Length: 525
Image 1 (cartoon, rainbow, N blue to C red):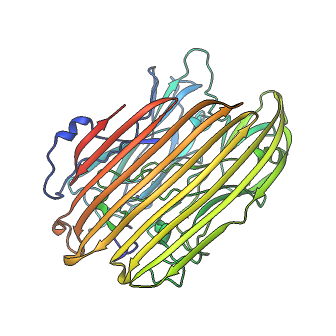
Image 2 (spheres, rainbow, N blue to C red):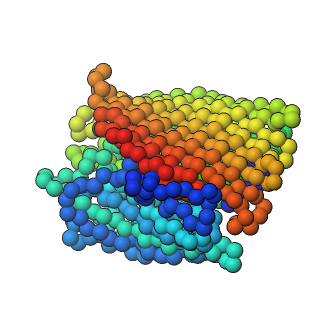
Image 3 (cartoon, rainbow, N blue to C red):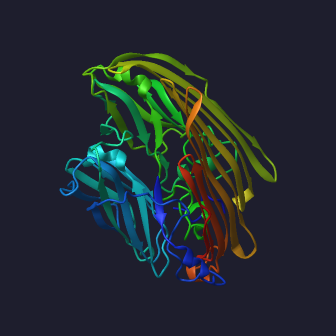
């Protein structure tokens, strides 16, 4: 039994237990109920000021009918806002798969999420996200669409009940929008983009997810045709999210290897603690400022997003995209030029070795550097963006896939220099796991996931700010496969430690569970 053929068909914070929950005694095995989902991630910080709350969506998802409504800005909390916080509260009980969902306001994707799998007795969970950067969209009444596609029948009984709110915190003191908030947010709902002619900074954010229950949900395990494995991909498991402008490559990125809450054939790994980013699908962000001069000519330009490595005709990837724009208040038209475009030849090699243990070794890499200048009201500004991707993995499995293992590392190193200021971000994603189906159909999964990022900003050789993120999940769960739910006799332990520290302070929290009971919830900072 491979991971593909198993049970899997899912900055925000999943809220949950307090440290007091760690005093509970775990049962000998999973029962009909367990602790509500939680992660070790930090909560969204909120200003200590007055606020206004608006309900954006409230629905029960039992099929693939989207919720549609209308958002109205809060009259009592006028712009500008110092912060806007989105909160999703959900409940579900019975039996259900993990499901992928999204929320769009005015066509702008503001949340992409997935769901936990419920206990028979029912669970509740909540996710929070800082959505201040979408203030331009939220200033006006907007149509709302939300969908968590679901199937409810005699077997899968779980109806997903959610409510989404926005809490607005008006700016105090001199009324000024935070500089990180763009002047305009444009959903890329077609293949063309027309920017205001005085645009001086452009970011694109792509909510890229491989999902839907098919092979692209496990893209990191796919193999070329020569290898005898369940899921095939012509060029193996290497994937890369790309964005282009008028047919010219403008940005590259490594997709995050998200594991949803049915992943690796073992839902008992995720009942309480989901894998990193599973409930908050963070977008890939590209700095397209070097292309601003080209885009500022008042014409429509073609902007395409694609995922390299996906076999032709295969579905499973979703890439909703928002364009974030900053404008020069001192000029009606900002001109300039794209001055540099250098791309390496993409490297992708998968070597299959046959044997009693099949093995696929994959390496991939790609580099891109683009640069351009803009003549703004505050002088000529040159922006250089460099990105380097690499991937290595070793996939090992036996005939029949009764043993299936993967060790993989993805790196995504980015440098953005604007004027004399440079921000470097080194991202590393790791996956090390094994699923085995042994005597008595006992299925065991042992898995470690890592989400790491080091960021530093320097100007003229002086460090202005820095941060280091290390989010590590480990799990070990076993159950009897191919039997009714009440005969699985499942056991499982999980641990997540989320560390974030740097010039902005320190956060360090560890959450451990045994058989769905929180046994440790420790904060070190």
